[in-house]
Length: 184
Image (cartoon, rainbow, N blue to C red; front, side):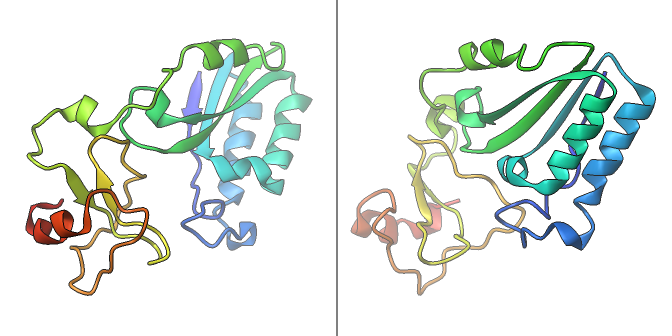
């Protein structure tokens, strides 16, 4: 079995979504390794947006040409025991297998409700709300521990003094403004 996650920056909503920048070609390099080695199984993981890419279509054709049965599925991590809303694309290949053979398993082994930060960590954080710097101030930045966290990004900043409460922010305005030093 080979398991891999080629770089996602050229497909990601956090990136430029431009497949010509070069990193998308590493998905084709991953496909080339698979078709040369021909493992019984492979798993490729990426951002959900890859499902709309022309690069994935090319890789898919390579896999089919050598006889892989393919199952593709987008999973939300919060329904898989992770307290984070994070949609990921999975492509699972089985040499000489049937297409979509694993879909019923992937569909039935998920939680009925998303995992929250509180369910995962309990009271260990000592907070009810936390700040995650939004990509745009048109988006919310304050979240409750009683919901899944948004995707954690490599960049985070303290709450700016000029941050204005967004209508989608968790908690009452007075509460979270007074509590800013306690936010993550």
